[in-house]
Length: 139
Image (cartoon, rainbow, N blue to C red):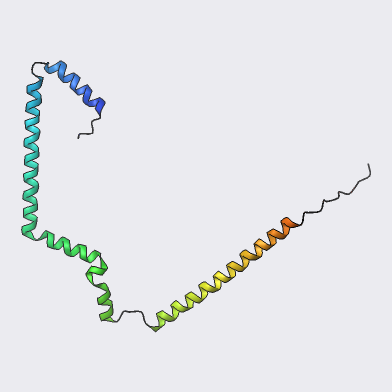
């Protein structure tokens, strides 16, 4: 609630027991509980009053229209694009086809390079390297 851990609350309880005394401690807890209940009730009433004021002023309507504006599908951006003529035309389709062709070309080149590398590695492991003869010097 106030950032107090169990150890801090135990320490506060022990200090309250020593300072207030065991005789008056239940009455103090009762008064603290009543105060907390009244504070929560006032906070609840304040929240309800604020929500009612927001409903009366139309904040929920504005909030819903802002949420709709944040979602392009609900806001109808696609329909606006169609109405203004901002839709994919032949140039865009041609560019898309060129990109697909380049992607296929790159994939083929990468696949060929990978196969060549694997074949080269397999050839290297199949033929053991010949031992290198060191030249004998005059000693």
